[in-house]
Image 1 (tube, rainbow, N blue to C red):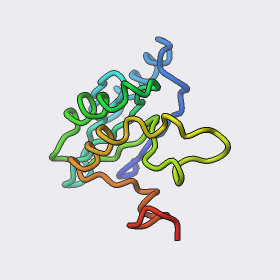
Image 2: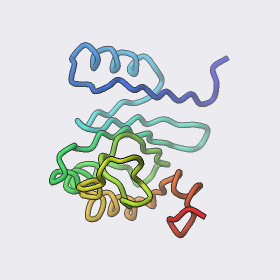
Image 3: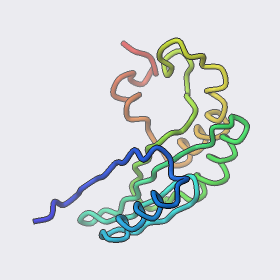
Length: 143
């Protein structure tokens, strides 16, 4: 018997290779879902009982000057307002350089794209950063 909900997450290390893209889309088309490719993000719509969901995989631009426009002009307008959303991927930006950065890597440029981009999409679609909510709480800080 098929489970009521099965999720698949693949780290394909980029989809620039045509063979990878063909294999991925062939596998997705073989399932019971709708695949909606939009370039740097992929949306899959499905129903579970009476609820409609959209799962979105995002790969935001690496170039800092392109990030805010990507979130605001490409991703945001394509997100459905009438479905439950689950969004993941590589956003290539962080909200807070103190709490969202690990190791010795510089946070310089990593916040570019959040304000005026991803933050607007979060607000418009009432999205929550689940890790932040569970680990940092309402204050956005540990403890």
